[in-house]
Image (tube, rainbow, N blue to C red; front, top):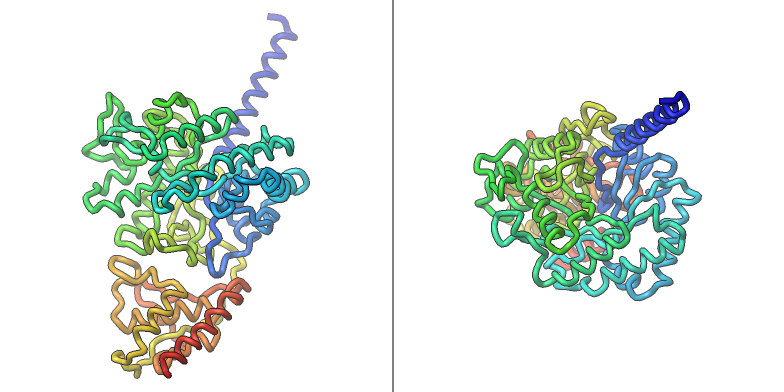
Length: 481
């Protein structure tokens, strides 16, 4: 072999090595960054958390300009979201889609240096609880956003997708090989999958083993985790000892049966909550997330799709303003508490520290709490409406059977509710005026694992807080009258 040819071969090998190295650097696990909190951490603080923890991919649920500005020139890969309530407008107006792309994608990619890779059009739009509301608009919205990206010259760089709940497919048995798309949306799913395939775009699915355990009291606990399940499923020689693999491969079979067996799959959300339910606790969350992350980093994949998986943990930070319609656990999915403190030890990979690094520079409100007066009469006819109002307008999801504050007595429960409302409203004196029932104290009422929180300092609750205080005053004027 001649010297020149050998040199060219060596250059090719080096370039290939560099490419593989770069791929390995950006292949770390991602996280979902939700913002439905009464007091969200500043975007700059959260971005520093991402960097400190070696997190290189983030999935957003909208296109908040402040968040995108904070992600500028960080080299963090971004999936930008479009909320479901925008689907109709984007589906029915090409110009609206073009304006959205121009404002929320082009502006940040071209001049802002934000590494946007995906646009998530909608979020779980085919949930059965939506009663078909978004079935006619999701695909047209996808098509219009795709056309707008192409027109903006971003068709090859930014891909569209639509994050779907795992209930869009099902198996007629416990075996993944019997999987197919849900009957009522089968034709629509094939159209969407075909569109994604034509545009080299991925199928994004949200998979939650916790929900399987939550909805079925007979679901085998060990099957939800990654430590091996003694009654593993044998599906024509493929062994399933955890529900994630089985769920994921049910989707693979659904795609394969309909002619799209090679379509890329992104796991858009996967995680475990830490409160709000008897199975939502720190121990289980650490066990699940570390189990999944270790498998992810090992590139094990699933029986039908061995090799690396593209995935985003859900979620980065707790959100105390999320809807609790699915369950009280909804506000507790974070790897970090509302103030950016890590919940438990978790190793996210070789580019990350051995344990989670919390937010820095967080400032708190003064050390004071709103509690039930020791002399308060529990038989007062104002107790029930007071507690109900506090919990409706704050967060009482840590109260209840099997939760972190499940062992409080009646007085403790009332105090917790009052304090939650007090903190959400920035410790305004008027937020601790439950008639004849409440008092402000500087003695921390926390008991054991039950923490009576102090809120962080932000401006975000002032607007909601002032409105709630007015409603609060009117409510109790009505009660007193």
